Length: 133
Image 1 (cartoon, rainbow, N blue to C red):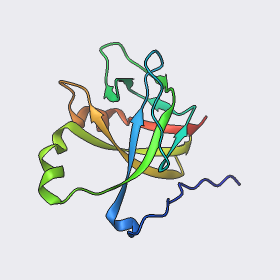
Image 2 (cartoon, one colour):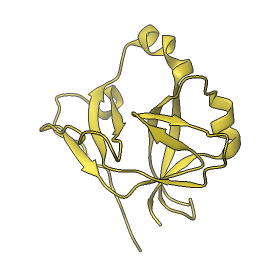
Image 3 (cartoon, rainbow, N blue to C red):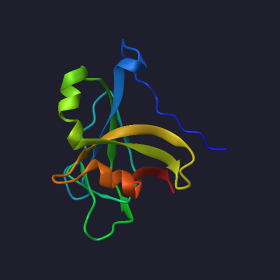
Image 4 (cartoon, rainbow, N blue to C red):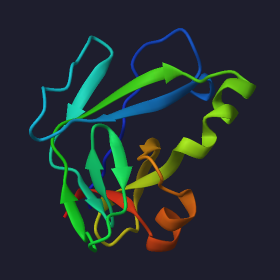
């Protein structure tokens, strides 16, 4: 049986005060910047959508799987109430699954929607990230 865990870097806060920030690099762009509080994952696959400039899109042509370049994960402090709600229409929370059978959710992450994209369409298509195919 395979197990995977997202580790918690030593902050002086409880996990309830933190969220996992995810930044998707571009295959043809500059490398994703890392610091002492971030780590990278290579080989994630985005099922049902495409990614450009750290935003996700549902394209007119049907995209089945997009191979993502380096993805940076970092623990950040959650924003206080109103600040996050103002931008909620531009953000969607998607699951990151261990493998393509979608039984084991590793964690959920927030993603920025591309211009003109609607959250409902991503939910209808079942868009998700897969860690291991």
